[in-house]
Length: 227
Image (cartoon, rainbow, N blue to C red):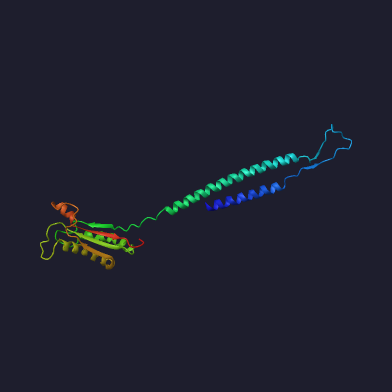
């Protein structure tokens, strides 16, 4: 839009120069005065002789019409330039007022390994979970600077093992997933394994189906700076 305003300004000044140049070429009326004879009485009318070349009146009228038309064009260009400048200022103010969107640094869930992945009280992983892990390893590798958060959860059934409660069991399950990622080439420095035990249920622990949902491991991808 700035180039349009610049172009219109050039046209405006050009037309102004043309109008000025035309005004300098305006024909001059040559009027000669002849004194009356000495014997003219006051009753006689004193006459003046106007020496004007043929076609001068038409040329003057034509030039005045052209000048009026040019002035109308210049006025229209001035109004257009003012309007465009106003729009440009409005857009500049609007652009300055727009704040860049805040980067979304919230973690994104890549997979949830449910009750079919782990038997109650166990941390061993079945083959189906292994194929699921292979599906998102490439995405993790491509997200340079991101971190992998692995959260383990259990149902409320005690493990029945000495010195191993549900929190320990959930951490073991999270680490089991983490070890597989490391074996697939993901740096252990990018992985955080957390065990929550039975403190974050997503369903009731009063039924087998609910407990199966609560036995889970969630794998999340946390974007890094610039991702």
